[in-house]
Length: 206
Image (cartoon, rainbow, N blue to C red; front, top):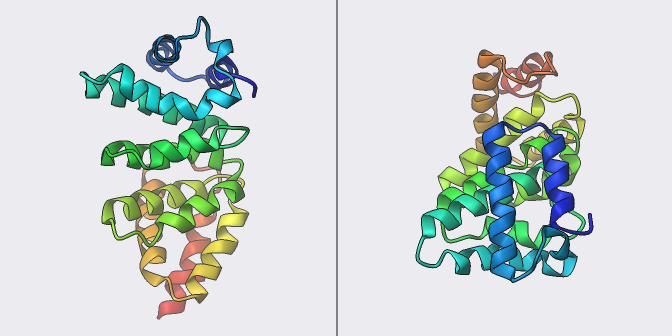
């Protein structure tokens, strides 16, 4: 991952909708203008952390457009994962003044987390006991969705650990979102997860 174009090309390979592809393409153009470079290939690793700030300054008089481009960037990083130089811009987005963008950025980790759940556990641990109930719900919802993926074993181990440490509120919240996910039967690769969760946590409270 050497430049912004690499991230864009990776994102395109994940087959987003045509509308999202258009938004990502437009965002690249805006970033190049904001950073005063000629092409996304020139937005190299040393400039990655400047991208969110540059977007904000580029759209200083149109904050709504800035939020849109930042959300596109958050989704692209969420697909690739906050690694290889994308950690700092992702942190910037997680700490943006706009609460909706912060929530969206965290939830954007779902795509990467479905195959690399161990890599996003630090983010979950950071926000699972947040004083902000909305971000706690986003975190629990993210865990519920990731439990339905085939690579959920690291998360299952962590859930046991959190339960043993008395983090019952978060476990119950995860269970609520997991139940919703299973009832919709969307993106459920791990079909036994509902029974596992019930036996591991719900039955043990009786």
